[in-house]
Image 1 (cartoon, rainbow over the protein chains, first blue to last red):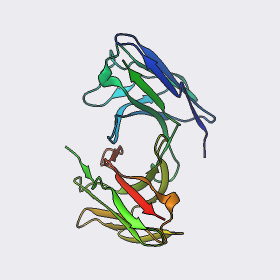
Image 2: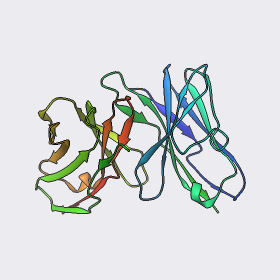
Image 3: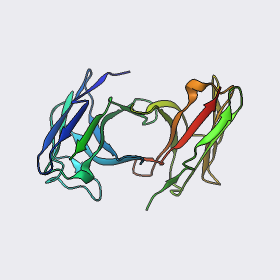
Image 4: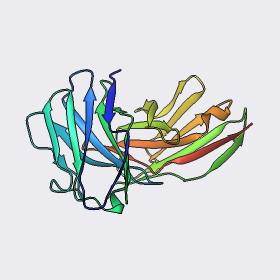
Length: 114
Length: 110
């Protein structure tokens, strides 16, 4: 299966700042997915990133808060803008497998906002 | 709103026992079902998937699906302390998105 690398693995951020998370895949993929996992909670899909088009955001998530780039078929970034403590979460990049739509995840980026 | 429900646990079982993890879902159009294991501080890893009614076995793991009852379960035989983790049920809805349950924490006592 593909190797999915995320950077940073963790960071501590100040309120009001923005942070960009990078996701690199070692093979070309059509869609990349960004999930959030808040403390003690399950995974929530933020958006789907397709190369060459605008990301598709889920209900409750907006582009101004979570801008996404997808410059090529192996790379994507998610920016968490104007952070507040409520944004403290693990952010996960994922790709879809070839069987029945299973997802594979990167190692995650753990953000703590003070 | 499409939902996937799991008991948060913890489910505590002795080493060598069978652990039974359960999941219900609301979207009758769901076709594919997944079980992920997540160790503390790590990202989820896929254990197995199932899309037909009945049982599917893979080593010590058995997934069971009952679409009529909108119920999917995971059995772990001969549970080991290394199986202690949070188990996430995920359901692919009718729009091909994965919806995750909140997870069941499993503790296997030595």
